[in-house]
Image (tube, rainbow, N blue to C red):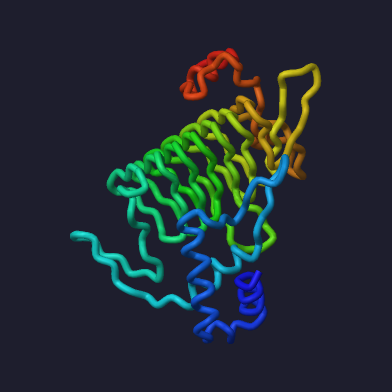
Length: 270
């Protein structure tokens, strides 16, 4: 509570950032995030709780940091944030040119292909972050998740009350999917390639006699593909993107199933 109080006071009065004790408190919080001792969002019953004060700490960390040059072999960077280190001791596989910023938590058994993970993110055990995938600031990625090539998981710092993107345990996110604006993907869900989800995207379950619509949430074990629906505009009727739930991942399916296998089970051409 003491750390939280310090952050809240600095948030209301930025002059407090000049105080050494305030700077130490903020740096302590970022180190806790880096080690997974704290997280910006955490499971809370059937939902998730967002710790807004930790997001504030991340934002306040930038103005107390100074720009510096980072040299990695022939590469030069100029930034306020150092890179994450200590992968070998933590049992994390990092393939060149994977980059993770200090302040992001990455658990043991994670594989980082050439990708980017930003400050405040949480990547849990056994997850694959595939080539050119991005895990944005404060995004929460569960255990044994597969983020396929080119997946874009958006980050969120402001507005403070906004929830980060959450991908729960065992989910499979297909190539070039985009998840932003606090979208939550339920456990063991499968998203086909190019599914784009925002807070306002319609996610329509078409498996029953009548469509069932969701927004901002993909139910557990859902199999999802890109779709479209007709919307009227002053200039006429046009097709607008949406996502279609076409089935459920079968209980008999191995949790490490390929995306193609999951789609074939639901009679989708691959």
